Length: 229
Image 1: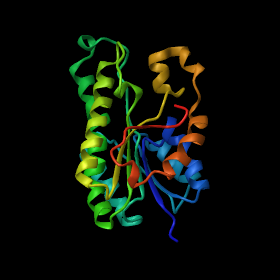
Image 2: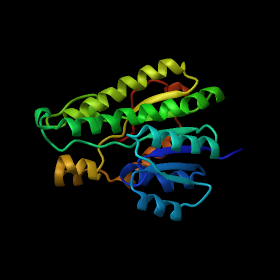
Image 3: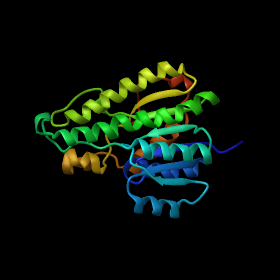
Image 4: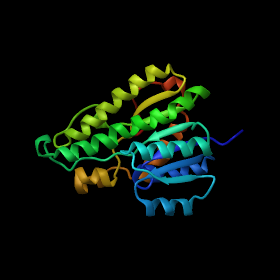
């Protein structure tokens, strides 16, 4: 049986980076991307072929088109896509967030996953199988002060995922996923040292990767949360 392929955006740090060795240990091939060219080069050295790592800014349609074309050429339609790449706004009320910062978070957190789906879903649907997980947040299902732009993007991911799940008819499962609260750089930007009271990315990955591997058609359109999250 051919090894399965997982696509992970934002794989150079945080949750994305923590999942890499666990998917490899499980026998999966990885296609990963991130914005930092030096970190992508290092991942390519640590995890050489058959795995593939490519510099890609998910806010840029041209970068995503090139990354997805390479995925389809090297691996064919992926079995699992984890749209993990995201940013959060600096703590501030909406009226103190600049238009440029608001646009940037929209471009990465919403347009990025949408573009990944647009470029990969046709091949996955033609094959008739696969799972796309769009990382949402607890702040995509409830709100908090000072993170309105981030909440807006994650609420959008919930709706985008559930509507696209209806479009696929379950041939490819599309799932909005709340990863839970994890001690990452992004959480520390909001919680400060208080983030240290939550599990770190490696602990999270040990729970998340087996969970993601088991997702399938039955989960299409269901807003899910990583166990323990």
